[in-house]
Image 1 (cartoon, helix red, strand yellow):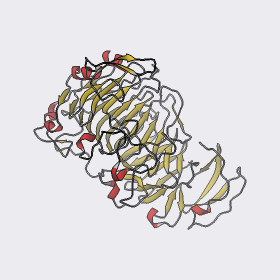
Image 2 (image 1 turned 135 degrees about the horizontal axis):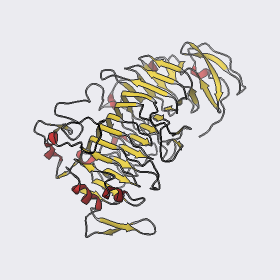
Image 3 (image 1 turned 45 degrees about the horizontal axis):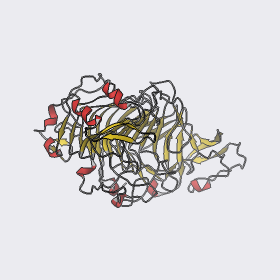
Length: 508
């Protein structure tokens, strides 16, 4: 990224503030007024650092406060609490090492589209965003209701000091920030009862920020009750680290819902995925997409997360679903921002030597249930040796149970790959993936989702067969041992109060 030093004064950011003199010398400190208090600019590695985040601007729609200065080089170095209110996030705001931003419950932060706003927690920084069920913290688009679309702003990135399998890594999406270390207990703060809406601005081709990106985040970090809606890339993506999470919602995302890479080894329980049948990425959208690393090498730590009690409500459950061509029109949510539309693929794609495991889950209405892809690395070998598991998981309404190759929509065996890494098929035999799935303990396949007796698409009715189907054999004590598979018990609505399934029409 561009790391030029900043010059000039920031008078455009302080329309309602007293003007302060600015030096044209890049190495000088520049004093001024932000949020009614004195701040000092310093130069930090070529970036402008400041001990305050807020600028008075007199804009009623932003509560009179802007966070950041509108460029991509703002580093916050202090400690500050955002009181409950409405704010406008401008540009890229880095929470630097030693800094801490606390956000009060009920706060709404709108991402500025023009400056491609993003909030980035760097190693050693902390974000304390502790909402409540009745007062969630909301990060959303600045645009008026009815005009919001995926990719209106950047998103939230959290980087920590835990292990990954590439040592130190540059975070995906454009920011300068690196992540990785050897402190698996690292604490980057709290995200609880938080919504992230319309994030994922494509800074460059294939350089979108996800809704929530987690780079080498350690187990000392608290993540629970998060809803990511209409992300223009993945809803959630983990790059290494071992942070655990509970109660995650991925709603109408563009690409993958839960993407795990580079040695992520945390645990996730209770998650809901709901797809829009018109929104899929050109790379082919999956519920899980999991890689050990890009080339499938046997580097450690392996990507080996354990997910339990996930409900995937796939695109085929949506009346608007179409998967007959490479490009779907996207409907009213197509942002026309250069992001390429494509096909839906699978509920679960595990590839490139990943060892992701899934337990006690439900997936309904995908073209493919499970892909164990051996194009790079030996994911199938790990499965055969019990190093990854898919147990007590039920598929319903799939076109095929399994496939052995990316972009293959047939349940046929892949016997190897040719010199150009194209799959070689034996169409007289079923795929390794479907054979593996049906042999795993507790798994079932239903013709249609109606057999599961769910209401509203994902809540089990009193007579639903999912209510007494769970088993936690092989899972440790971190997981709450419940009797049901999928995300919900009968009458247990942990979504109540804090989620929003119509954010495009909400008045903020």
